[in-house]
Image (tube, rainbow over all chains, first blue to last red):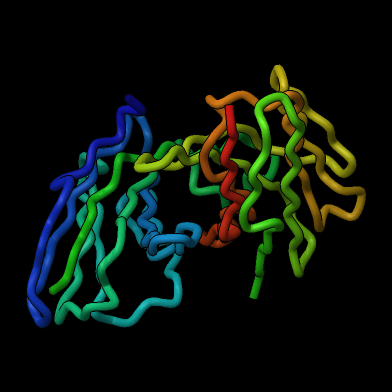
Length: 119
Length: 110
């Protein structure tokens, strides 16, 4: 158990619906990143938040949004779901965001993910 | 933008054989990380390499960072069935973005 918790673990949604995924980082970690992993591919970066501010955004449409709360937990929202949004959504927490800390350990601890199926 | 490519995509070995996966970047990397994902699981951090030419070992696993810091490799000696999974390399989280390769999936035949 890495300590990063994600909910729900599985979700089935209909095309056009909206979904909210939740993540609680390891205690003391202030950076949370979201990734989308399609079967057979590596995780694709969606967002990173650090100290409640967005620090990075991947090449995803505006239908994807996220936020980080004062307790450092985070939510990922996806609107107007498409069939192609079906994937494993991973949340990763780390001590630092990585920027500017080149030699510091920025290992990311991943949660077990949320398996989203859009039908 | 930064791209990280891994080869091979799949590797099937007999238990006891060695295994190597290679990671190549289109740009110089400040550091590189390696992760392992078991079937049905989530990526688990293995190691981070920072220095040019760096070599690190973890039991049967040897990680190398190229002199030009544009490539890296992971070598497993005498594979075991517990080594099965997909191994990913990931570029650094500069500006909040980290780039994962598509991984090398290792299967081990007992």
